[in-house]
Length: 351
Image (cartoon, rainbow, N blue to C red; front, top):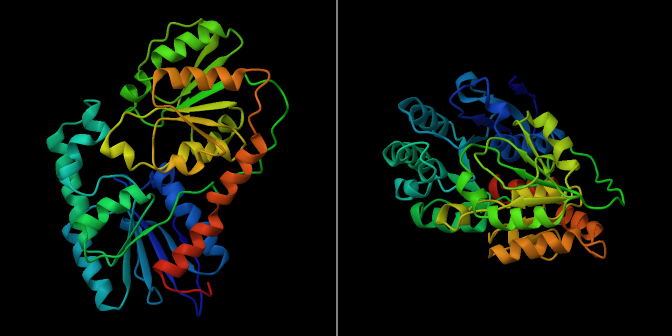
């Protein structure tokens, strides 16, 4: 349900979702991490007025800033933004993928995995571009994405707000039990080609390590030549149940094809696992590499994937789970995200 909190004397922020189904925006991981996280912190500081869907929004006379999550152009949106600007309201857009212009449509996972046509995605990306052009400020999730935004929106300020640990997740409490559980969270049905990159090293490792277990959570088309009792497929779960699956992971996997789109993606999978002191083996990715000295092991080749798995399952393994957790909390905490939003975006240091 939309949330309304009445405030006085502080910058008043409204956060609007643009999901196709207005009843499902709270299930969108992007909205959860980018907006519900921020809203939680702003609400505690009495700086949040409303969070909900664009279609349910009623204009509030106290509003000073409106944050649009992944806005999609329409005539009604343009009319709304122009009306708000006449009232002196600043419009902020949040975008966390390279979906900013039709020039990048061919790199979309939906196109690469033959889920949607390039023409269809190009049309969507054009709407995204037109919506972003209407905004006063853009925030994004990675430095790599910011570089592209700066090229296409020369006159618009762009600020990076890194993704962070979800605000309600509890502190890590790892046991000293041997490492056994490997996890892969697909999230959507557009990661078949990503996972295929590590099929061979996974088969080699699991066939040599009978104690290892692999959980694949979410939609994925894959056939692995390993023992049946080593592999478990788990349907995608609601976000409220997601934490329990992340907690039980010992080693997390995040393979990505080399592409301009994936280069701009956030290292969120490493953040999620690192919140519980769990390492993630990651394909080269600029944002994930921020954690390469603690929670992330970068794997460029099949040999790298195999070597990292073998090392982590070695009983003599010296992986520092405490450092993994501490560094993740240090680099991906909500306080930093909120402070930067207040100081660099809504220009208020005392919130």
